[in-house]
Image 1 (cartoon, rainbow, N blue to C red):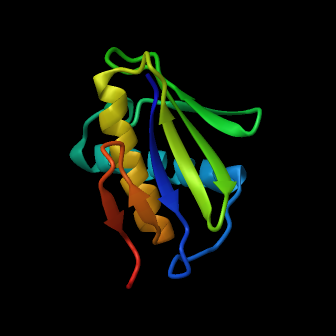
Image 2: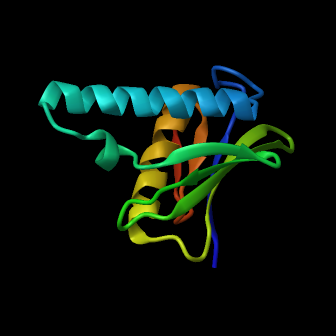
Length: 129
């Protein structure tokens, strides 16, 4: 069974709308900063930090990994009363996928100053209220 996390862009967020291209840019930025962490530690950390490759397909980002313990996740954007990002873990995702999806969703929510609803339903606020 698939599980989902949401990042809602609220009036206190940095921006009110977001595109898949902007999310892909944030993904590349996230990979870059985790690689720099590995360089500082003199450790090949890039394959462990966030072992996913990004492909934009049919209105969403598909993040896939060939590393042991990881499989895939999907990131999409949409809008209802407010714009949001949705991170989906398919039913066949692994435990490592959920950990990395939580890390990545927290990063995105902090960067965008949004409201994050985690996979377990808890809400984290990354904007000034």
